[in-house]
Amino acid sequence: MMRRKDREITDLQQITAIMERCDACRLGLNDNGAPYIVPLCFGYTVKDKAHITLFFHSAGEGHKLDLLRKDNHVAFEMDTAHDLFSRGSDACGYGMRYQCVMGTGTARLVTEDSEKAAAFDHIMAHYTQEKLPYSSTALHAAIIIAVDVLSISCKVHQ
Image 1 (tube, rainbow, N blue to C red):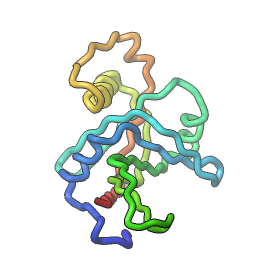
Image 2 (image 1 turned 180 degrees about the horizontal axis):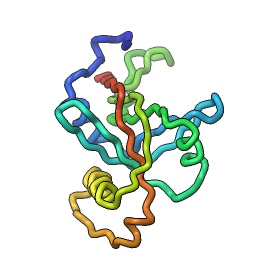
Image 3 (image 1 turned 90 degrees about the vertical axis):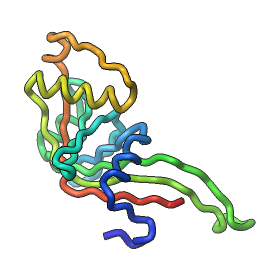
Image 4 (image 1 turned 90 degrees about the horizontal axis):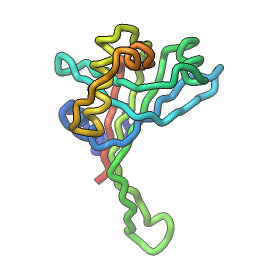
């Protein structure tokens, strides 16, 4: 539950507009009871005006995948529009404007090439307007992580 209700955004259209402006999404994983956070390029879909799925491209091996295979419960965070401002002459008079989206979800590895292609399209659409082709060999070898969002919150400090 968000303490500052005056900064909370609940409208999904406003939340996705903020997500569009974010450059990276930080994925939080469970590393034997300790947090492990990794920044990733991402894309997403919204289905039925409520269900969000995040997509991430990954190397075929590594610590992140090892952790996901042990525990697929994840947290995520993305932020943008940072602006330092001052309301006074001492350190406590400074503040930061920002927009952030965070939440939890369950991760899964995408195995079907058609779903991998769609995920790549969403990732690329987040960063560029180009629709790029994928070779069947590269697509089959690609590792895509999909996170089905279970909870999401958004906070804006203007």
